[in-house]
Image 1 (cartoon, each protein chain N blue to C red):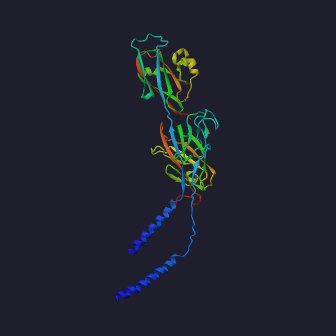
Image 2 (cartoon, each protein chain N blue to C red):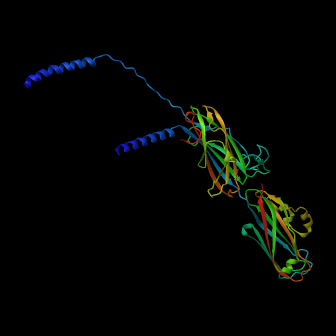
Image 3 (cartoon, helix red, strand yellow):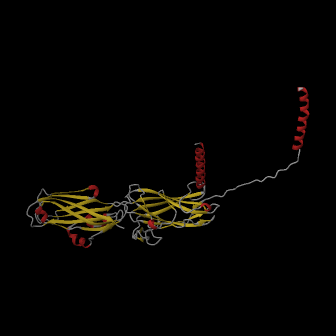
Length: 200
Length: 226
């Protein structure tokens, strides 16, 4: 028993000694600290306009009313239109801004209508996107004075996809109307959303 | 009887004392060897002015190595990248003397405003500024040790979960000169490729630590310590 203890102690000392030798070599260390700061991909609706009653060929009901609101943290526009009537025309104009820090491609505008099916069947609209625009929207009359007179010209500069660098804006113009075949006045809601992807 | 014995012992004692005194009275001289050990220093550094990188912060937008347009890891998992048409992110490298011993021991690499497939390449020189030869032993990335160039299963680099969300967000490839011996004053190239992966979180900041270790040349053994 005593012999075993002695052997154990000796073995431990030998192992310790070997380990000490292995770690006793000189070494020096250089460090590289990599700090990664990622960007943000984000587009938002930042403002809207509704211009209605353009070229009305019929007397519109006095209780006609519209309103619009940007919701879902800038990802959705909701328009409410009450008592629209035959030949009613309007333009919804929206500004989308790249509020992120990396470029983004705006590649689709989605329009959904909710309301009287007969009205929706006679509803017509078109989506026109153009840009990119810099900081000042006053550079373009399509935002300051959107009108049906400018539509032909506007449609000629519409684009399917717009690449927006951080801080840049695009204008979405949605001219729309009710055909004469609709004979009543009714309400509908409109939802506008958009799809975007990273642009690199 | 006892008195007689005492008288007899005293002369014997005196005689012995006298003999000893003769022994200590000998002339003598000593030769001395003074051993002075002056140890060397194992020291290496990031070499100032040797860093080359793609998409350095501050470059004007444009193409080529001196243009600020970003690079995209188009060919992953194969190496190589193509330059994009925009300057969105950038890479910055600074050298730091963290222990104030007069050489640069830390390299801060910062990737600003980056996104999936952003690619950068950083090449630099390491320099033996000590007094004994050293060998570049290993690289430790995110606590994982490697003793050689990327090879075989690590062909495209090491995928790292830098932000700790369980998804790999960064790919690091490293190169060159493991096991190479640097004599005092000699230098060698090392390079890193960094690619941001698809699972990198948006709007986040995270750090990855990379260590390069060198050992004294005569104790170098390829691979982990025995």
